[in-house]
Length: 80
Image (cartoon, rainbow, N blue to C red; front, side, top):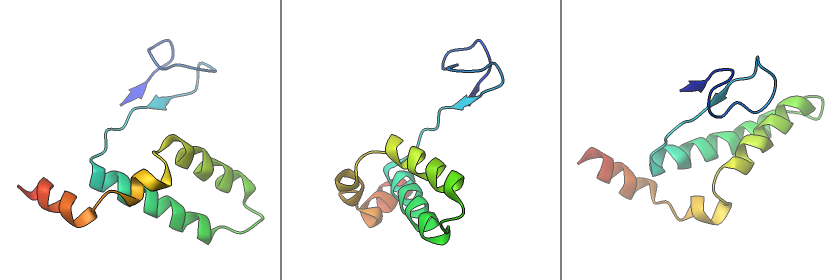
């Protein structure tokens, strides 16, 4: 959900929005994997995109924590 200007989470210019996203462990693992794959698709001439991808990855749990998520187990749990 976006935090509009002047609302909680506003850190910067008045036209900047910040989002809070709640992810299940399975969604988190897929998001992390997708971002890592996306990095492989961008070349050296797309520095700005690569920088943003790295900024998002830095906000996610560390690599060890992501690897510890069992996608099969989490998907079964979500299916219950």
